[in-house]
Image (cartoon, rainbow, N blue to C red; front, top):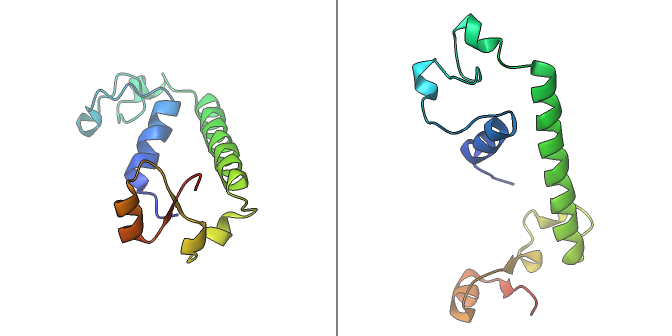
Length: 106
């Protein structure tokens, strides 16, 4: 849907145990996530990390389906190129008018 991969990447890292200490570039991640040190990499269990990532994506899938269902949409593909299904949340009526979208709940 055009989601910035950086934002998705951060959520994925957090799901496998990242504490967002912002030291990834050093290659010495204390949690063994973004490190090149073989001793530190042993702190990560790839099977558990994969399960946590799968849970994250599964949860997102359920949330997206719930939001789409609330809007009366049965497939995410229905949103592509169709501004009639887009609803604004937290917008003023002027902002919604300028963007060409209806307000949620209207």
